[in-house]
Image (cartoon, rainbow, N blue to C red; front, side):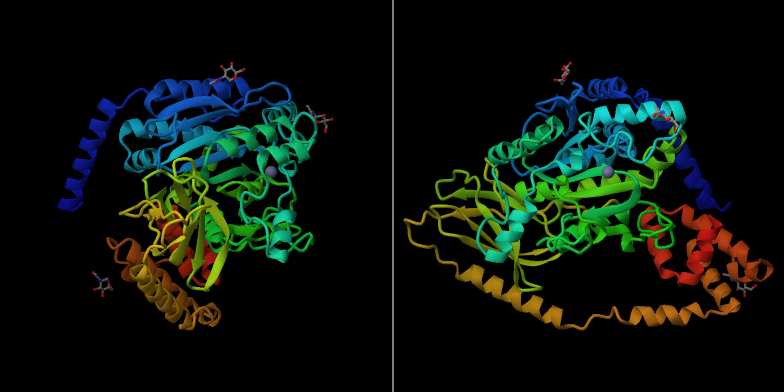
Length: 562
Ligand SMILES: *[C@@H]1O[C@H](CO)[C@@H](O)[C@H](O)[C@H]1NC(C)=O
Ligand SMILES: *[C@@H]1O[C@H](CO)[C@@H](O)[C@H](O)[C@H]1NC(C)=O
Ligand SMILES: *[C@@H]1O[C@H](CO)[C@@H](O)[C@H](O)[C@H]1NC(C)=O
Ligand SMILES: [Zn+2]
C-alpha cells in the first residue's frame, strides 16, 4: 500500500469511529411485508423519531373496510404550504397485490428520517426545499386479501387483491377527462387544464369508490407539482397519456408535455439499477415487451381509461408518472432488501425533479397575490405553444415543470393585461450533481386592464434573441444516424480487439494494476469478470453510462457474468 492510501484509510477509519460514537438510535425497521397495523405503527415511530420534519394525517375517507388512508408529510416546517416550496407525492399499493412500492416507501420514510438526523446533504436539501407527502398504501383492503393468499400459499395469483373490497380496480375508477380534452383539441376551444371541477366530477360519476374520492379531494386541496404512483408486474416508467386519443388499444399518445414527461420517466429509469438496462430480460417472455431506456408512453403500451395518472395531469397542476417496480407483484420478504438497493437512488432522484423548470409568484401592481392565473409556455425549439397551462395557487405561486430549452412564458388572469417573459431552462437536479439548484425564479406583476399596457420593449428584445438562437440550434443536423452504423462495425470485433477494449476500460477504471502486462495471461472471460466487478462498484448511473459505451456483443457477454 502506498503512503497516500494509508493516509486515506486512517482518515476513513477515524471518521467511521466518530460517526459510530455519535450515531443516534436507529428506527427498528424490518424488511417484511407490513400489514396495516404494522404500517401505521411504523409511521408513528418515524413521526416520534423525527417530529420536527414529519406530520401524519388521514385522507378524508377511509377504505371500504374502514382502514385509514394514512399519509406522512415530510419537510422542514411541516403542516403548511410555503410559498415557492413545491409539493410532491408518492402513492403506493393502489393495486392491493402490487406490494413492492408500499415496502419501498416505508423504507424510504425511515431513510429520510434517519439521514436527516445524520446530516445527509441531499436529504437535508430535499426536506428544506420540498414538501413531500407519502402514502404507502391506497388500497389496504386489497393488500390484506393478497396477503392472506401469500401467507397460506407463499405466492399470490396475478389478480387476487388488485381491486378494492368492492371489487373495483381503482386505476380504472377516476373520472375520464381524456375524451373531454381530446374533444377540446379537435374543436380548439375549451380548457386544456383543470378540465372539470371536482364537485361536478363527483356528481357525474356515481360509481366512484371511497379510495378514489378521498384521493380526488386530496388533489383538490394540495397544489401538487409532481407525483408517482407505484405499481408492480413489470419494470418500466410509464408516462401520460395512458388513454389513447385514437381509441386503439395501443397507440403512442403524446401529451402536450411529452418532452418533459420523457425526461421525468428517465429520471427514474436511468437511476434505477436495472430498469434502463438494454440487456435485461423482459418480464413477459412471450410477448417480450422490452422498453427502450426503461420507459414507455402509456398509450403505446396499452390504453387505460379512467386512470389516476391522466386524471392528475388533466384536473390538477400535478405531473404524475406510473412506476412498475418489478416483474413479481408480491415477492417473498427476503427479496425486499435487493429491491431497495435497486430503487433507493431512483426514488431520491425522482423527488428532486420537483425542482426542474420555472416557478415564481404572480401578483398585481398593489402587491397582492393573483390566484388561478394561467401560465402558458411556448417552446422556442418547436415554436409551438405547449397546450397545457398550469394555474397559480392561492398565494399566487406557480410551478411549471419543463425540460431544458428556451421558452416564452405568458401569464394571464381575468381583469389584467397578460405579461410575457422569456427564459432559458437548464436543469441540474439529479443525485450526484454538485451544484443542484431549484427551478429558475420568474415572478410576474400584472397590470389591471383598466390601466395602460406597460411598455415591454426590453422583454421583447430578449424573447427575440432567445427565439432566433433556438431556431439556429434546431437547424444543426442531428448526429443520431451515425450511431447504428458505428455499432454494427464494432460488432465484428476480433478477440484481440475485444481484449484491447477490455484492457483499456479496466486501465481507466483501476489504474493501480498494469492491465496491458496482465492481460495476455488471462482468459477473455477473466477480463469480463474483472470488468463486471469494477462496474459493480460504481453508482448506478455511471455504471449505466459505461454499459452504453460498450458494443452490444460485449454488453451481453458482460451481463452473462452477473
Ligand atoms: C386516522 O384514522 C384513525 C382511524 O379512524 C385514527 O385512529 C387516527 O387517529 C387518525 N390519524 C390521524 C393522524 O388523524
Ligand atoms: C391457495 O391456493 C389454493 C390452490 O390454488 C387456492 O384454492 C386457495 O384459494 C389459495 N388460498 C388463498 C387464501 O387464496
Ligand atoms: C505495463 O506493462 C507493459 C508491458 O509489460 C510495459 O511496457 C508498460 O510500461 C507498463 N506500464 C506501466 C504504467 O507501468
Ligand atoms: Zn398496478
